[in-house]
Length: 57
Image (cartoon, rainbow, N blue to C red):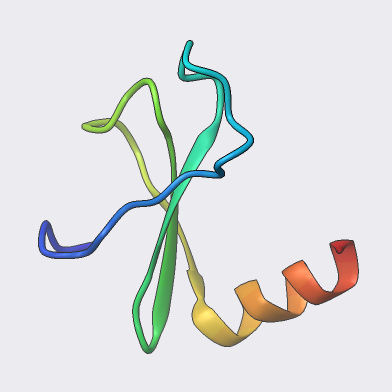
């Protein structure tokens, strides 16, 4: 993912950083560990990420 994307995390997350951050573009959604912003990023097609959220919500 490019560095120009906006990473967000849940407003329900704790201050200790034990959560994930998500960045969404038109085609790709990235998911990373909020404690390791320079670490690996899992990427998914955005339509697949939306389907995942719909089924788990």
